[in-house]
Length: 127
Image (cartoon, rainbow, N blue to C red):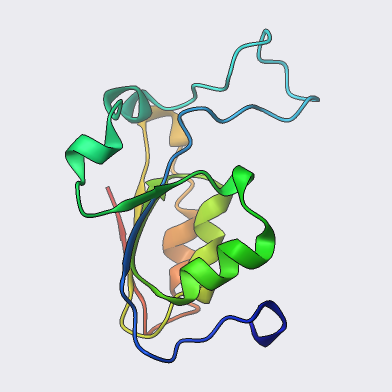
Protein backbone atom coordinates (compact mmCIF):
# COMPACT_ATOMS: atom_id res chain seq x y z
CA UNK A 1 0.00 0.00 0.00
CA UNK A 2 2.94 2.31 0.63
CA UNK A 3 3.75 2.31 -3.08
CA UNK A 4 0.35 3.94 -3.72
CA UNK A 5 0.58 6.44 -0.87
CA UNK A 6 -2.09 4.60 1.11
CA UNK A 7 -2.18 4.38 4.88
CA UNK A 8 -4.58 3.28 7.59
CA UNK A 9 -3.43 6.15 9.83
CA UNK A 10 -6.22 8.39 11.02
CA UNK A 11 -8.79 5.61 11.04
CA UNK A 12 -11.45 4.69 8.52
CA UNK A 13 -13.93 7.39 7.54
CA UNK A 14 -15.50 6.41 4.23
CA UNK A 15 -18.72 4.49 3.60
CA UNK A 16 -18.18 3.19 0.03
CA UNK A 17 -20.50 1.46 -2.41
CA UNK A 18 -19.16 -0.01 -5.63
CA UNK A 19 -21.53 0.88 -8.48
CA UNK A 20 -21.48 -1.79 -11.19
CA UNK A 21 -24.74 -0.74 -12.84
CA UNK A 22 -22.90 0.41 -15.95
CA UNK A 23 -20.41 -2.43 -15.94
CA UNK A 24 -19.39 -3.57 -19.40
CA UNK A 25 -18.37 -7.16 -19.89
CA UNK A 26 -14.95 -8.03 -21.20
CA UNK A 27 -14.90 -8.01 -25.03
CA UNK A 28 -14.49 -11.81 -25.11
CA UNK A 29 -17.72 -12.28 -23.16
CA UNK A 30 -20.76 -12.54 -25.44
CA UNK A 31 -23.30 -10.12 -24.03
CA UNK A 32 -25.10 -9.10 -27.26
CA UNK A 33 -23.45 -5.67 -27.08
CA UNK A 34 -25.41 -4.71 -23.95
CA UNK A 35 -23.93 -3.75 -20.62
CA UNK A 36 -23.72 -6.81 -18.39
CA UNK A 37 -26.83 -7.02 -16.25
CA UNK A 38 -26.06 -10.26 -14.48
CA UNK A 39 -27.78 -9.86 -11.15
CA UNK A 40 -31.48 -9.38 -10.41
CA UNK A 41 -30.64 -7.45 -7.22
CA UNK A 42 -28.61 -4.93 -9.21
CA UNK A 43 -31.70 -3.93 -11.20
CA UNK A 44 -33.39 -3.00 -7.93
CA UNK A 45 -30.57 -0.61 -7.01
CA UNK A 46 -31.26 2.18 -9.47
CA UNK A 47 -30.46 5.06 -7.18
CA UNK A 48 -27.66 4.25 -4.74
CA UNK A 49 -27.35 7.87 -3.67
CA UNK A 50 -30.99 7.89 -2.54
CA UNK A 51 -30.73 4.54 -0.74
CA UNK A 52 -27.41 5.35 0.98
CA UNK A 53 -27.21 9.14 1.30
CA UNK A 54 -24.05 9.10 3.46
CA UNK A 55 -22.12 6.75 1.20
CA UNK A 56 -19.62 7.54 -1.51
CA UNK A 57 -20.70 5.68 -4.65
CA UNK A 58 -17.71 4.81 -6.84
CA UNK A 59 -17.14 3.31 -10.25
CA UNK A 60 -13.80 1.58 -9.84
CA UNK A 61 -13.26 1.28 -13.58
CA UNK A 62 -13.06 5.09 -13.72
CA UNK A 63 -10.30 5.26 -11.08
CA UNK A 64 -6.62 4.42 -11.21
CA UNK A 65 -5.48 1.49 -9.12
CA UNK A 66 -3.65 3.88 -6.79
CA UNK A 67 -6.84 5.92 -6.25
CA UNK A 68 -8.71 2.70 -5.49
CA UNK A 69 -6.14 1.53 -2.92
CA UNK A 70 -6.02 4.94 -1.20
CA UNK A 71 -9.83 5.01 -0.96
CA UNK A 72 -10.03 1.49 0.45
CA UNK A 73 -7.34 2.28 3.03
CA UNK A 74 -9.73 4.81 4.61
CA UNK A 75 -13.00 2.91 4.08
CA UNK A 76 -14.91 1.77 7.14
CA UNK A 77 -17.73 0.05 5.22
CA UNK A 78 -17.47 -1.39 1.71
CA UNK A 79 -20.58 -2.62 -0.07
CA UNK A 80 -21.04 -3.94 -3.57
CA UNK A 81 -22.46 -6.55 -5.90
CA UNK A 82 -20.59 -9.82 -6.24
CA UNK A 83 -17.66 -8.96 -8.49
CA UNK A 84 -13.93 -8.40 -8.74
CA UNK A 85 -14.08 -4.98 -7.06
CA UNK A 86 -14.73 -6.64 -3.73
CA UNK A 87 -11.19 -8.02 -3.72
CA UNK A 88 -10.33 -4.56 -2.42
CA UNK A 89 -11.46 -5.78 0.99
CA UNK A 90 -7.83 -6.84 1.34
CA UNK A 91 -6.89 -3.14 1.58
CA UNK A 92 -9.53 -2.22 4.20
CA UNK A 93 -8.31 -1.03 7.59
CA UNK A 94 -8.75 -3.13 10.73
CA UNK A 95 -12.31 -2.98 12.04
CA UNK A 96 -13.84 -2.25 8.64
CA UNK A 97 -16.83 -4.11 7.23
CA UNK A 98 -17.36 -5.61 3.76
CA UNK A 99 -20.86 -6.48 2.51
CA UNK A 100 -21.31 -8.53 -0.65
CA UNK A 101 -24.66 -8.31 -2.41
CA UNK A 102 -25.41 -11.19 -4.72
CA UNK A 103 -28.29 -12.07 -6.96
CA UNK A 104 -30.07 -15.25 -7.83
CA UNK A 105 -27.51 -16.45 -10.38
CA UNK A 106 -24.37 -16.13 -8.28
CA UNK A 107 -24.58 -19.91 -8.07
CA UNK A 108 -23.22 -20.39 -4.58
CA UNK A 109 -19.91 -18.66 -5.37
CA UNK A 110 -19.28 -16.95 -2.07
CA UNK A 111 -15.71 -16.10 -3.01
CA UNK A 112 -15.53 -12.83 -1.11
CA UNK A 113 -16.94 -14.34 2.04
CA UNK A 114 -14.02 -16.77 1.90
CA UNK A 115 -11.58 -14.00 0.97
CA UNK A 116 -12.70 -12.08 4.05
CA UNK A 117 -11.38 -14.94 6.19
CA UNK A 118 -7.88 -13.83 5.14
CA UNK A 119 -8.59 -10.62 7.05
CA UNK A 120 -10.02 -11.65 10.43
CA UNK A 121 -9.91 -8.00 11.51
CA UNK A 122 -12.47 -7.13 8.77
CA UNK A 123 -16.08 -8.20 9.18
CA UNK A 124 -17.52 -9.86 6.07
CA UNK A 125 -21.17 -10.40 5.25
CA UNK A 126 -23.16 -11.58 2.25
CA UNK A 127 -26.74 -10.63 1.42
